[in-house]
Length: 69
Image (cartoon, rainbow, N blue to C red; front, side):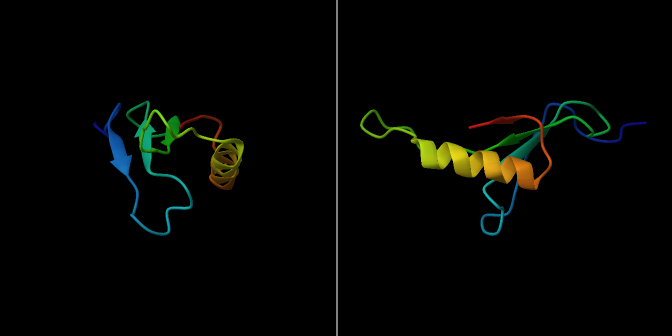
């Protein structure tokens, strides 16, 4: 019985994703999930506190207990 895809990332919709870019299911049932937000890396550009706080808010909106920025 294969319920889901463990370890695979599922991208969210491009708009209306509430700050979440993808979701990783850690188990075959999809009960343990890691929420992901991706940012473009540049040496001259840092991720500031407002971006971090917005991601934490998005995690709370999903009732998530873990995420990766």
